[in-house]
Figure 1 (cartoon, one colour):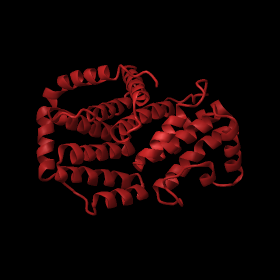
Figure 2: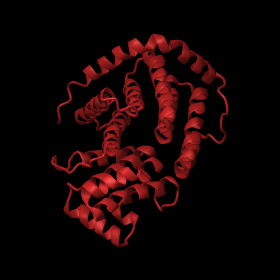
Figure 3: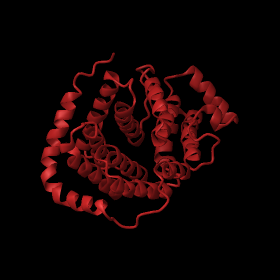
Figure 4: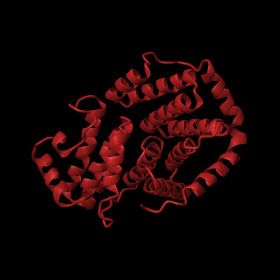
Length: 304
């Protein structure tokens, strides 16, 4: 949580926008998320005002959330719940939380912080892709959310927000992974790897870990390449360790039966790296065409 919690400018924005007490309350769900990831909470899948504690701020925060659904503090609680569910692959909670967020009053108060609003928008898109893959109730409304997320992040890239480039690349890779065509697999893998390299340059260890995990999922489920997927799972685990997400490391290692770390590429992982380097020049143009086709397929996205 270091990029989020210790950003004093972001906290200052909270205080400026929301006032002293609400600004402090904005940070509490993020602290609970950090406790969940580090394995220091009773239930790492839960973020509520009750789980944060019954001290004065916890009581104030709960009271606020019950009376003012437009409050940025309440919105931040919802997004911390959504982020927590995304990290721990809790699809059911992702669906209910995203539904709750988009059921809030339209005139909700926004936080005057580029970092926070971009985080919200990016997370919307990632969760929407996950739901389209795994949740049978996902439909037009979820597609609309994904389309808006893609457009919003793309607009930020055009405005030269350099840290959003990797976000857009990762989100595009996730969208490409929805297409069930074996001929697209190499392009999708290359796109994931590009996102991983871009996150590495920006220092976003948490998103880099998630990009590695999603690539590993794609290799395991779609490409059926167990050996290469293990490499990327191990990379994700290593980065989650750097992020001190102990609980996530424990669960992912247990789920994928990965107890050792790969220090180098080997087997199909090495072949995949070589293939990626060879195809970089070839796939860039075709990938743009693929993204245009995918965005066109999301046009019919009116709310149910």
